[in-house]
Image (tube, rainbow, N blue to C red; front, side, top):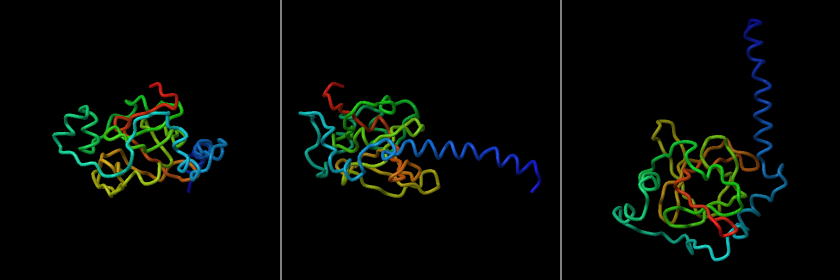
Length: 189
């Protein structure tokens, strides 16, 4: 290896360290937050009183025509046709209030604000989910395999699961904002 190649390689070392520091700073433990198990178990603490959510994860069956009538075109594209919204287009990516994120198709609670982190990707991202509400399957749409996840109640596509999230889970549920509805803890949207 020549000196120039070595020096070029070393210039990236501070960036790697900065990236690791950023990921660590996103960690709930570092931020003094509850454990993943506590967040999953006590998710209803962030649900507004009287919020209208699905009472259970019991499967919901609707025809394609019914979905077209119920959902906005962008929601239909993502939830029913596994589309992807443009990065940075959802206000939910910047949502910081306490509350619960529910499926836009059927109102099943999926995530809480305490599970959310800023991934810098332009899509709402979460490091864990409410237990028992998401199903997964392998997706080969971009040739390389990915893990797609969807709502277990209505089958609506939400996004993809990656292993580049913050500690303690190391997961990133990369969600289309249009597939979610946010219910603030205060009850005021």
